[in-house]
Amino acid sequence: MRVAIAVCLTLVLGASTFVGEFLLKPSMAFAPGAVLVMLVFAYGWPRLTDSPQPRATSIMLAVFGGAGVVATVLADEGPFLEWLPILVGMGLLWAFVQNLTRGIGASHATVNVSAQVAGLAITLSAATWVAAFRLTNDHTTILSGLVAVVLALAATALPWPARYTSPLAVVAGTLGGLVAAVAVGGDSAALVLAGGLGAVMGVLAAAVDRLLGLIAESKYQAAALTEARRRDKARLFAVHASLGAAPIALGGVVVYVLTRVAGPV
Figure: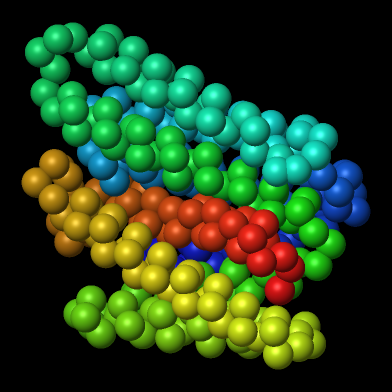
């Protein structure tokens, strides 16, 4: 299910390029897709981490994720992410205040704050897709990253142990990056960069899938994936939504950094 969600989010990201650039304005390209990725993650994350305040946590992540995308769209010049550190600081304050309202003796307070902080970092990462798009007119890097992360996620979803799917995810990500670069007619240097980007996306997808999969089945998760399938389909969808959206959001950071450091693919 998480792969299907990731594919849908990727397609929306690609379609939002046209919506933002041609129907709205160039600075808003990728913004609609980034907002959707952020909202899907904001909905699923507190259910994945078994937050005692799922609704309040989802609202917090949606508010700050939306603010991050808006700030990136409104930025006049690069690097377009100046407001994200400020939003992180404000989100930390929100998380502490939100947990203080539960009372001093609230259970699993440290776990809940840690989960909220991690979710805040991931949901703000969605804004980097918008910033990466605005950095250059050559968007081969973005295409390579999107194809690579989807193929890598598909590899991690295979019903095999992680010691097999993780290396396969790296291989699938590398091939995805190369195929995307070849499809747009990249030269040899572009192929090298696209292959490297794909490999990093594969490592990212495997790491996130492994880490969040462990969280989903930890003792703090009231309905683990295998149990939720029988007990609560809505919760299962939320967990898979988080597992599918998180690598997409974090993948924008990789694309943004590569574009800033190495230039367009």
